[in-house]
Length: 98
Image 1: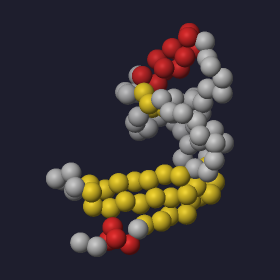
Image 2: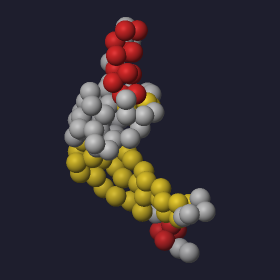
Image 3: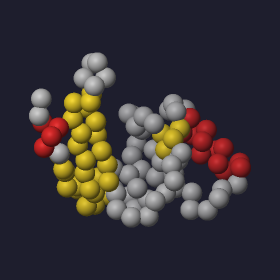
Image 4: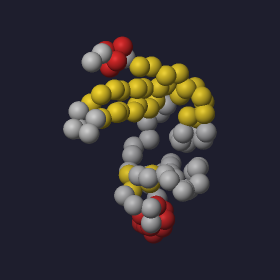
C-alpha cells in the first residue's frame, strides 16, 4: 500500500508505503489506510519478487506521448521497495525522433 503523492511526506516504510508480509487484521489495515488517506488517493499494489524497475512518461499539452524513460534499480533505499539510490537509465532512441 502506498500514497499517490509523496510531496512533503518523509521517505520510507510507514510514511509513504507499507508492505504487508501476511494478511493483516481488518483494524490494522484500516489504521494504515487511514494514515495514508490523509495525503490523497491510496494505491494498493501486489509485491512482486525480483529486480526494481521504474518508468517515466512525458506528455505534451495535448496528451500525446513525447518520451519514455526507464530504469533498472541497482540500489534501493529500502529492501521493501522505495526510491532508487542508484539506477541504470535507458532511453529508447525512437523517442527522440520527431
